[in-house]
Image 1 (cartoon, helix red, strand yellow):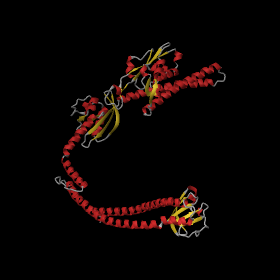
Image 2 (cartoon, rainbow, N blue to C red; image 1 turned 90 degrees about the vertical axis):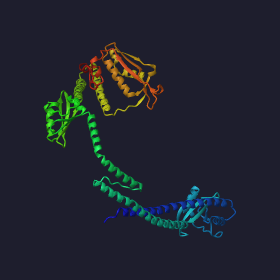
Image 3 (cartoon, rainbow, N blue to C red; image 1 turned 120 degrees about the vertical axis):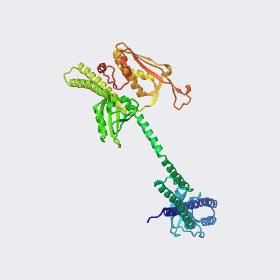
Image 4 (cartoon, one colour; image 1 turned 60 degrees about the vertical axis):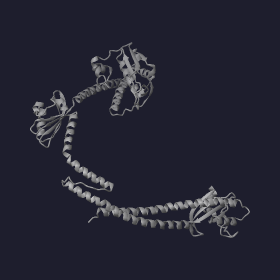
Length: 552
């Protein structure tokens, strides 16, 4: 038999507090050891300052005597070592009795003091057979004064603290055991009552209510169960609301939805379906034949009423291209969904025309490049023809490059990979650069730049506006006859509030600049003006093909 919830809580809290006590003991031992070492080191350094002052101020006194005086003041073991490593004085010995044979420069604290002025080491002393903390410092007289403290003092202090922590830990564990026992009983008692009430509610008796005063979490749980019982009594009203919400959702769909009853009559049609099939808003009790007499439509309805799902298929009703699908309902009826794809099919036709046009545009320069390059391979070709043919190859290669660049730009725009980085751009200078890149001089076309003074510099992406101007001016030059004129002008546009503005004042407004390119060519017929920004569309396909346009 498993443990009850109160037993689980009791043992869990007891184990947790015991682990915390052990962890605190280990952490306190390490922290106290570091703190005691730091305190003792600080005391030793202060005592070294006094010792250096006493040693440097008494040059006539023997080193053994001064070591004894420093030891008497500090209570530490004191050793004075000459720079060459010989012991010249030590506390606890008479004058002249300090050992002189050993070279103390091999001690790490002595070596560090000689090299850096101060040294520190914790190591085992062979002479005293115990671990010591050594602090050494260089005196002005050139000798090293070293103080030593046995670590046994620190260990004794730590042992006393550890015994205190252990005692406190035992008391804490006992108190925690009592606390966890009482807490587990206080928690599991209300839980049992809540469980009994929940089982009663699950059996269908919604009149049962739970009263729990503490703890707060369990009281909130009891209140939640009471709220649940109240909500269950309101379920019928909620279902009605959900039904109305479902109808609103279906009515807002852009796809046409038809609900058909098991007897074949139309149960419901959303506004999109009413528009597609030209139905009246109250279109109930209509037969499928009254909706549409198309055999494909009637076949979809019959298949769905027979209990089979109809996968998406395309049909045309009243000149409208539709993607239709149908699903049977549990009550024997069916739901049909129609997606209007007429615009998509039109765009696909435009795209097919575009592919054909681009294929022609690519084929023309490729054919020219291939033909003239093969001719250039003829070693007997005259030099003047060789240069002219090479120029024709270059021009067709540039035309091919422009087509490829247009396709790449279109791909970046459609994939969202076109990054806009605006900056202040002098529009007149950029227009001149774009103009020089065209072949306007060959057609004797005049460029007129008319810029408003307040709009000489505009906040745009330099490369993007360069491409726009290049396209506009290139088209204007292409369709402008000899001795024609192309005009680039700017004029103030409408203002828009600056980002972050809340009052709409003129000070918070940002003016716009309108760029216009006008030519004296044949222009675009009025019938095509509404479609000039439509992708792949060309106002005059024959002339565009002749001039090299792609419709991008």
